[in-house]
Amino acid sequence: MGPILIALGLAVLAWVLVIGDLIRRHRPLWHWYLIGYPTTACRVVLTWRKIAMLNDLTVSKRPPRGLLGDLVVKGDPLRPVAPRTSFPRATRLGLTVLVRLHAGQTPATFLKAADAFVHAWKVHAVRVTSPERGLVLLTATATDPLQQPGLASAPAELLSALIGVLESGGAWVMNLRMVPHWLIAGATRSGKSTLLARLITQLAPQPVALVGIDCKGGMELGLFADRLSALATCRREAVAILSALVVDMQDRMSACRSAGVRSIWELPDKVRPVPVVVIVDEIAELYLSDGTRESKAEAEQCSTLLLRIGQLGAALGLHLVVAGQRVGSDLGPGVTALRAQLGGRICHRVNDPATAEMTLGDLNKDAVVVAQSITAEERGVAVCTGPDGGWSRARSHLTPTEQAVSTARKYAATAPELSAVNRALEVPKGESK
Ligand SMILES: Nc1ncnc2c1ncn2[C@@H]1O[C@H](COP(=O)(O)OP(=O)(O)OP(=O)(O)O)[C@@H](O)[C@H]1O
Image (cartoon, rainbow, N blue to C red; front, side, top):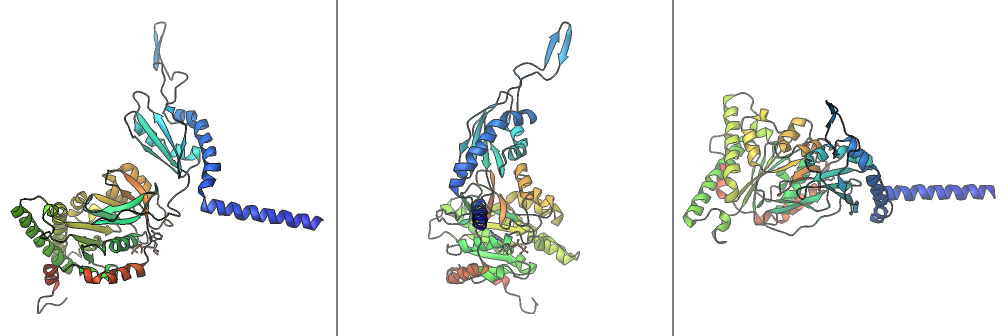
């Protein structure tokens, strides 16, 4: 009897461990609604007053100074009042709490307390937003939804690419019609090239000319050469391509001027020039110089040409997607000016805080902190800006290189011909490459 009971006990223990592990790893929805949500909601209700007091979220109905006989007495009045909250509402990924601000309070103090909420409620993250004046919405996510992201979907649109999935579960879309130029930063092995491969795979079936500038000898973008209308593999070629595109931009301007319209999108379909997306892999290669006069001049030329396309290209159907491991003003004087033109920002894990600050700091300081917390294991995870000016953590859909290459091959025949650009790439007779 004894050994049977021990065997049974061990079997039950093993079953509990296996099932427990499965539940922990896969976190099915019912587990959250049945166990996670009630426990977290209780924590929210029970800890609210204490967190509010410890993080200066309370106010007192009585003034902080009073009269005691002829004396003015200063101090913290007793019984501070925490702001009123709604009952925590369950969502698929966590819960939300609506907070009614006291007069004189701002969402900024709640932003500062976000970490305290995370620890007290034992959740993955808490985002603080203000959907309406006088209200703050605390959105807690129970576990990191980007660890095992599902597949998002989005309607197919010209110049729009479904990149991956947002932390909220929504689709991460790069829409170049809405945000014409993008800056993508990320340390090596953070997921930049995978994201560019995804972008090319998504744009390949569309009537869009893709131009690659990959001064690392074309190692990354060369894989998609079949679908690219032009590819520069060194800085000399990059200058040639960008100069030809600037000339093309001027032709587009005169076409718009003679038609009396402000952008190529207002031109009739028949005469509208094809939109061009210039993808730059490793911006530093364009800006760094070895100190010689020619190299400096080339870097300056690249900087000026990119800036011109950034400034004027949006309405003329010329778009920039610029990626780099490090982005900083030390690369060259034109980098900060170019950044100002690249409205869309994506920041993967970066090695130095300055790059995160350069990529996101001018738009949102909180996003910088979140970008810096991305770990080396979180490949493909990034902080991206949205068209509404907000930001979100997101993860790109993993596009294997073979899939991206075969898509590029499949749509090779549809690659629009940019004859002026390709003519500019031809090496003049007597010159070596
Ligand atoms: N969204 C993702 N999900 C899962 N794995 C990913 C994702 N994106 C990238 N990876 C993995 O991370 C690794 C590095 O990705 P990638 O080559 O894109 O990095 P990188 O930033 O371009 O690096 P480098 O600058 O060295 O080229 C790849 O092996 C890839 O499989």
